[in-house]
Structures are given as structure tokens and as C-alpha cells.
Amino acid sequence: MAQSTFRQRLASFLRRFPLFIRLIYYAYRIIQPKFTLGVTGIVFNSTGQVLLVEHLFHPRLPWGLPGGWIGNNEDPAIAVQRELQEELTLTVSIQTIIRVEKTQYNHVDMAFLCQAQTEIGALSYELLAYRWHDVATLPRLHKFQYDAIMQAHVLWEQTPCPD
Image (cartoon, rainbow, N blue to C red; front, side):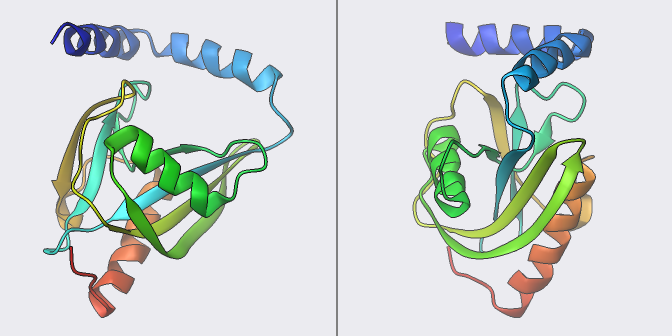
């Protein structure tokens, strides 16, 4: 309970002072290679709702797809499975890659359509909450994530995966 209160207070602070995240980002960029790679997992439930998470460290657009950065010499598909396991205690199988795009100056994102193999468990310290959202009523998202969800939903509708 105390950890949850701390995370809520930290989220409130970061939303009031988003420049703080920007400073951390630039400090982190100094030690990174020319490009960083990120992965996101798109998971639908049996009714076609998409899994979104509320990120603690994304104050401007807190809701988005679960995922993270690829580690050194890590396969992107393994990275997305690791990230969903770390963030949601969720085991997934990879169905297909949906989208790859340079989303920032020196960052490339990859979105994978995934199928849940287990139920969602404990959330990591990076997340405040998760929700299943109807694709028609998504909250404001980063363009890459929105576009990836729309592409994945078309594919999911053609061949729905059971939960």
C-alpha cells in the first residue's frame, strides 16, 4: 500500500514537472549508442479490447502499450516477452511483428501482436494500472502506438486469437 502511494505521488510530481523526465532522458542518451530500440506488445482479449497500461514515467501521455527498451544483444521478440513478464507478470507468445518505425530523433520502435498465455499478475513499479480498452474509444496515445493498434486490430479481426 505504501509503495502504491509513493508511485501515485511520484506520478503526480512527474505530471507537474515533465521537464524532469526530459532531463533524465537526455542524461541517459549520453551513454547510449546512436540508436535505441524499443518494443511494445499488443494484446487483445476475447472481445477485441486492447491491453493498455498507465506508465509512471510517461507524464504527458501516461496510457499506452506495455513494453520497453531492448537490451544489448537481445532479440526483439524475446525483449517484448521479457518486458510484458516484468511489467505485468504476463506470459505471451509472439504472433507477428506489426510495425517498425523511427519514432524520435534516434529511437526505433517495434510493435508485436502477442497472445496472452497467462492472466495478468502483479504490476511492476513502472506501472500505475492496466485496463482493457475498446479500440473505438482509446485514450490519447503516441501516434506510433495508435497506428500499431489499428493495424493489429484489423489482423486480429481476420483471425481472432482465443484468450
